Structures are given as structure tokens and as C-alpha cells.
Image (tube, rainbow, N blue to C red; front, side):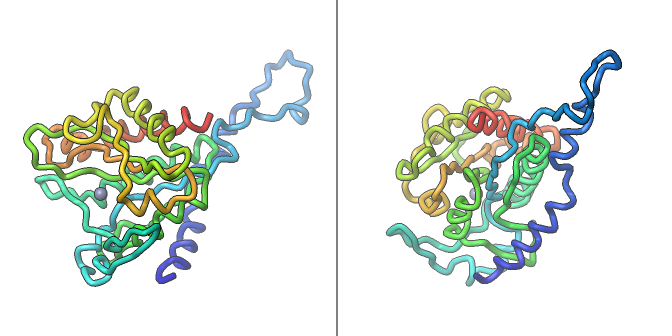
Length: 257
Ligand code: ZN
């Protein structure tokens, strides 16, 4: 309960401000002057992701560190008990994971909406004044769409550790296929699989409530290692973030085609 009604309201309002599928349809019905078809009988092509709903979970929240009691409170589901949430990591220069996740999630939302998809976000801000939602609520939010993608970045201090990995839970049907498609998209965008986690960019885990409690296919992407200078530079630049989004869009289109 807690914050959810406010979030739902904020999401409903946010949906009014984006450049949605309407823009994608404009300009598609350009008739040649020689055609005999009446414009009223020509329907524009259906956007590729029309009728699809993608739930995007921007990991953590900027204010989590300021709310330790709430963030450390235990939540349970599926036989697991975990802290509500965590603070996330940061680059050595102090760029917070929560803010990176939010930036990628909102860019991804815009791209998916242009392709005709509906998008649901599990949090409605990146704010030092706010915390959560808890991981159980994030996982359950998958039921509001066709699938859930949770956006994260890692914080490994292992020397040379870099690259992305996509995590899925073996108990949630369809998640392995989603993870494979997201991996394919990220590879196609020229991004390297993790050198230090998972195998060839994929990792199966059973200990994450965000994934375990999803009632739709769900994957958690660790887009890179914020403690690696190369990954950190890419994550900290608008062009670099766009590249991660390119990979995610490719993966989602592949999965939802
Ligand atoms: Zn994270």
C-alpha cells in the first residue's frame, strides 16, 4: 500500500507528457497524388509494439540511504525474506546507480512508447526525499504488463571486472527466453558480456524477490560495472546511456515481435 496510490497517479499524469504512439503514426499515410485510394480508407501501419505493455523497474531509489529503517525492513514472498530494498552502488566519481537506472528507464520508456507500447514504471521519481518501493512490490508489478525488465548496474571491485549480465529466475516461465533476447540486443548494440559474473552475459538466480515474485517473464539487467572506469564513463555520458537503451530496445523488439 504505502506509496502506491500516489505512484499510480503520477504514472497516469506522466503518460500525458511523453511523445507516444500518436507521433509514430503521423506521416505514415502520405498518399501519392496519383493513387486512387481515398485517405479515409487507408489505415496507417500498426506500430510494432502496439498492444504490448512493458513494466520497467528502475532499481533502487535515490533517497534509500536516508531511510535505513524503511529500506532495511524485511519483506517476504515465495519462501524468501529479504530487506525491502538497498541503496545501490555508484561510480568512483559518485554518480549513483539509482540515478543511472532512472535515466535509462525513462529513455527506454520514451523509445518503447514511440514504438506503440504502453509502459509502466515501478517508481515515479528519482528523489532524495523518497525510498523504495520494496523488492516484493517491484516483482509483483510485472502482472501489470506482458513482461518486466529491472534496470540495474553493478559495483564490483574485482580488478578488470566489466560488462553486462542479464539475470533471470528459473521458476518464472518465459524468463530465460526474455533474458536471452535482452542479451542478444545488448550484444547487437556492441556491448560486452560481463567478465566477472554469469556466463556469456546470462545468469540464473533464485534469490531475487524482484524476479521470483513476477507473474510474467522477468529479467534483471546489470548493464555494467560502475566501478570499472570504461563502464563508468559509458554510464555517465548521455551517448553511453543511449547505447544501453539501444540494446534494450533491440532485445525487447526481438522478444515481442
Ligand atoms: Zn542495483
